[in-house]
Image (cartoon, rainbow, N blue to C red; front, top):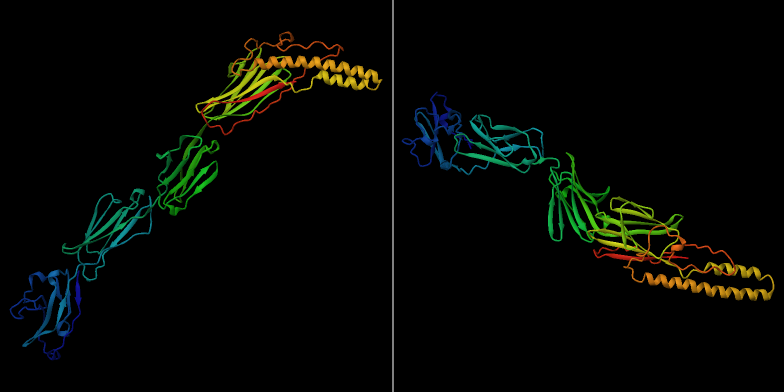
Length: 522
């Protein structure tokens, strides 16, 4: 650097206008004024100190009482005391009180880099580097630019005390350093300033990290990834993005926002999923929103669970027996019917029964139609199965002993009609009715005992001796009641009553689950 020392002095001889040349000298203290060499002078016939040549300059005009001194490229060796001496003809005088003290310290000035607060990725930018030169001389400076954002090191030299550099910032340049270095005239000193680039850029990538049972998996999907979990397990999802400034994050499931973050959260958003249920499955999307461009990533979570049979039913229709069964599970279950201990799968049709099945997502639906005129004592079951387990609902067809026999109903009506006659006739009718009831109950009871005996073991096919062909009255396994003595016609009516067929929706075990439902006829 340089130093400028303003200086004035006074001597009476300077008041005389005698055209005598006035010489001024600056000496380092301790130098002999006659035999020694000055540091600076306007006397061209005096040699100056070698290490001061070109750096120490007497700027002032001694004839005008001006002794100002200039020092350029100051060095630590320049530190010390100096005195001024003037000569005019025979008048010579050295000013030693006070002495001039020059203190050379380390250079603290640094170049200044003008840079916008934020650079935008992809947009060209020009930066300026300026060195605060105050010495007033056009000296040669050397500027050097260094940084990862530059394709190569850039250098320039000249008398100018500033330099420019142009480049196109990219996302990878964010946070990198850029340095401007200035080498001072003479090449002995250099100063530099380093800045950190702040580059704004859109979302570069979105990653999803899954923590499950103390295990961590990282997904960086382009479109979507899948994850299989068991019902009841817990997950911790973490969404992370790379953008500047940080993007606003949202966890979304079926158009519903589950969690949100602010840009100040450094592009990280957690989502806790405890005790997962089947309805928690779906496509979890992390949406990163940024003013320069948004991006998203998805993780499809499939919650696997054992089959659950919903809304099973059987009904007696004109053509025979019609049963329906719906099973829900993940992965999608298989569904089949068991008729009298024999499996019936898929879509099957013959002269005796017809099975119609279809699948839709986690659902399997099926209907079983059995053509029969009368209902044998038979066992039907609907079975849903997948790798997570098996669920079975078993239907047991049996007579309903709690129903009042139709003969009794008809006899009661007949008794009431006869009651309008004589009391004696009424007594006779009541006696006949009681005898008829006793006979009828014995027949029904006998049929019930045989039915119970045949289905005592639910695992044994209850119709192994039967055919699924349409059953004629002669083939009915139930005893045919004797014709009533009064000659009244008897008609057989059947209805289906379910007792205790409840769906176990909380079943998550892989052990087979069997539920029983009894179908009674009257």
